Length: 91
Image (cartoon, rainbow, N blue to C red; front, side, top):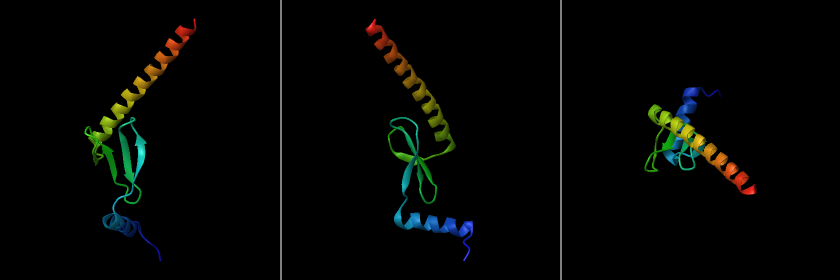
């Protein structure tokens, strides 16, 4: 029996309706902000400013991308600062 993609989507949606979503971390934006994706129906969520899960809309995607870029540059600056301060103490 061949299952079409429409039937498969209906089965996964019904599974999530009956048993609930099974979210997995799909992307770690910062240490506190993460993006989640349901293992079965592929519904995407993210954490908002209050720490609650909210649907991942294009606006939240853009916010997360900017937040990730800022977080990465900040951690790089802190790493350089630690390296420079440790080199200063050795002299």
